[in-house]
Length: 274
Image (tube, rainbow, N blue to C red):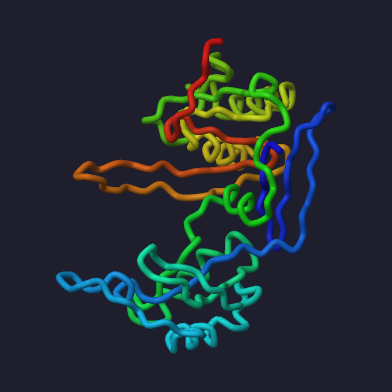
């Protein structure tokens, strides 16, 4: 398998074959998240000793109230109760299982959970899992490609990272070569290269290239496809974070149907001259 495409109520898998690429839609997929007790009930308050939550056979009153609140909501496909360990120091306890209507609805459900009561009243699990990893884990689909790495076709798109609008597109290179002196010419040249080479993997110096190309295509009225089907998806927005006293920047992440997008600015991947 090469790539996973998340749809509403289903997923599509793209697989490499001896003659090209095939797309198969798997209907009825509902991603899952779990909701458990407040962290304060599991780890204790600052300065206090670790608690030992009492065992229970069903949901806590707070989780039961939440179950009633979520029942029938548009983003919720079904609700159930499953026992899991919330920490290594506590035994399994009944948690609220929430099956969402789509991968995109998972965060919406988690947001509603956090807004239902006072902050910290509930702990959500399986929310921040990447889309492709989530589908692989929950469906058992093998994400490994059907070919060796050397047999997978790649196309490199690069642009200086400090440039951030479509007017900078003439600086973009395809496989190391400049391809146009205007944004329109660049979009048309990239579309031509993608159609001619039919790459399995797009290696971009920054994922912003994806957004800029589609933005320019819209501005100039160009029918543009970077994936094997129309459109693109923004998986996450850019953000700033602090870790161990250092401020870092996480760029936005994008995906296109039927192709893998590797962002060199946000991964350990690098192209080898061999």
